[in-house]
Length: 445
Ligand code: AMO
Image (cartoon, rainbow, N blue to C red):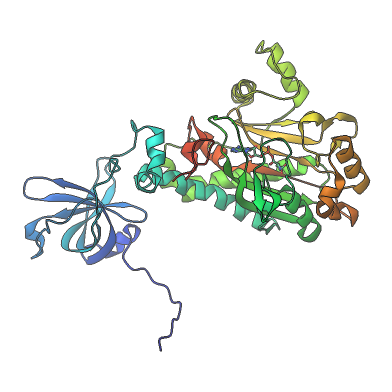
């Protein structure tokens, strides 16, 4: 019998610790990223889990002789002596003088696209997406989703530090939460159910239990149009908090979350941010403007003729983004008090002016990345609003348990992870910020 003790150790030395091993032999494991033959020696770049390590093969380093089977994308263990030098920028870099290469595996076929250049510039986005499992091996592509990890991690860390409990709500549901036509229907053993458009109904229910909750999970939207900012499955970063004094508490929490995230990216994801030339915003505070004031501004200042007085089109959002940057010095802008007709049934109307709601969107560089607001917590008020909207309260009986059996004033929001990543990295298409995007034309890979 063997005993598995769970004492985890590194299987190989990582580049980050090369400084401690200068002059010594170490072993690293990874992929052969690139082989460059020079006269009398070769550069062999090894792509490890977090760095591309420069190794040098020359017969004088050891008795080891180059194995002709070695090719790009072979997985290997390389043993070599750590030596230091300076790179083009004059910074200290370490490399390995190769003493042995153990082949772990050889690829069956050459790669369909070139991944060992600095970027995949020039390769069509569709090709990049078709070959995602390999195009992601390009260090720059890989950095996108490492940085995205940082965003989600910052969201989780900040909220955990502020008394929130992480939840996991079901994605197969008896009712859609957001309304509209973009809900995926599913045959569930002969019954019709829906894929979750958001964790809305469950996060509210759990405010009744934990007071403050958050979730980072996929949600599904049957988007019928092919746009540069819509996915059919995206990662929603949601939170919901009870005992609020108003929806400003929610906006304040989001400002705190975003500050924390940007700071984390600048410190712990510096390498990725530099590689991607990420323009990480400085946040001190975020300005807020009322929906009607924003409409007036668009018409007066930008002479824009809106087609819909109850909502913004993408051009209006973009103009508001420019206004926020130029006039207010902010990459972000909250727009508050959206018209009631455009917000879901759970949104609290403004008691002073019930045509508008106690809700907000957050624009980031002219793109909506968040919706949020205060919710109705009174049972009768919620049932009345549903009836007014032609929604059958009986179909929402589980949801209404929150209200029926006592709910505090509460509110929350949802942030689209891919949209936030997209504008942080200056992408034109949200698909670039989705690891395996799903849209009207794509369900593979
Ligand atoms: P909403 O439907 O506005 O609100 O969605 C919240 C945020 O999710 C992102 N988003 C999308 N991202 C990519 N592709 C899509 N098809 C897509 N649709 C939405 C956007 C958007 O701002 N329950 C509410 C949130 C709340 O009030 O708590 C909701 O889901 O960034």
